[in-house]
Image 1: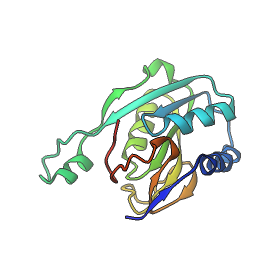
Image 2: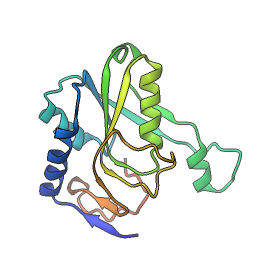
Image 3: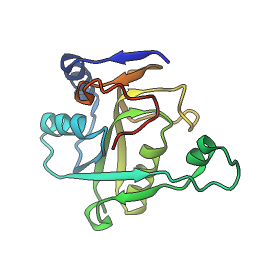
Length: 168
């Protein structure tokens, strides 16, 4: 798989590309851990948002349809390890931020949970990978770039991470 190593300057350009896309004001932001923490903080600062929450989502291997480990992870229901109380989301426009939309499972799970709480979620990522997207024509509401590469962000410290392996 092709890799792309970004610099801090590259990330700032991506943020600069995102900010003009926002066509409404948000009441709050949910930052997806771990990948969304730094871009979320940068966007919160640029947008003047002070109501910031975090969400941590895990997809345990629980599928009964296909026994291969990869299929189990793709078919499992999300486990919300951390998520804001629904009373904090009701009636709010919430920007959901992560670094990459790969399969799209995490972002759609968070957006659906916001909807279930009576809020409106808008998804935002630095990179959208349409080849890995599991949701057909569904894509992030806002994204800075389209890619087919495995992106290594400057805050990842070039630790030699393998594709599809989360370190947090």
